[in-house]
Length: 298
Image (cartoon, rainbow, N blue to C red; front, side, top):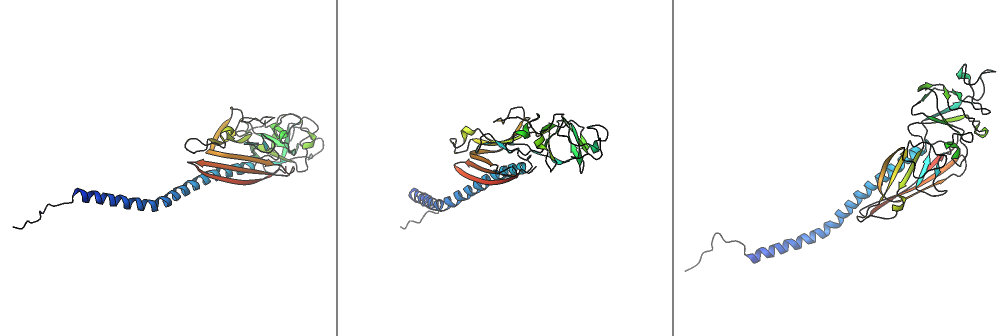
């Protein structure tokens, strides 16, 4: 008598185990081929993201420095540091250096004819050219003829410096009123230029903080420092690093593992700021280097 096969016959346990083992082997072979391309792709995406963040931060610094008051850039250390300070400008112009008519009184009568007098405690001058938009609160400031590469006069509101507080009205003006402290004679230049420092910005500092965390990574392989912009903390005759906490600050980029800022003032007319910024995330590091040329000609 012959035995017919059951229509419900299936795989045996041994056959199922063999199939599972074969699938595992094939999966291992396939994964070994695709793991490296996927890892490379993810690293490439992370590199691009880190590069864009670092580039955006450095470009922001460059835009700020190109509007800085001439010879106002200074470092917390003479040659290299993580603290860079400067005075931003919103506008500028030319002051009247010669009277339009003889016997024009100072800061009275027709202000449009008033000169800036460096021999006394003058407190106003006429603007040659278009009217300027000035703000009285928080008060704008002005600097006149900042030519000293040591930067200190631009932050100094005494008779040895060139910083003065605007005391006029808010709006469009053709004459500038300011605190009556005599300006130094050396600030009287042929260019007759002055710069307006916005009252809502005042002095500005870019800093990589905390500096003690630079060069060290956390347990996840990330940088531990940040690039921070400080502003509206007033004016300090001597640089304060970090700036006083009375102002405002914003983190431009974090995960910073390396930061080096160098300012070389070749002479009183030009300068060069070099920035090296390094970001590290998950042990992936991107380093950017940039050179920012600064025009110190008042």
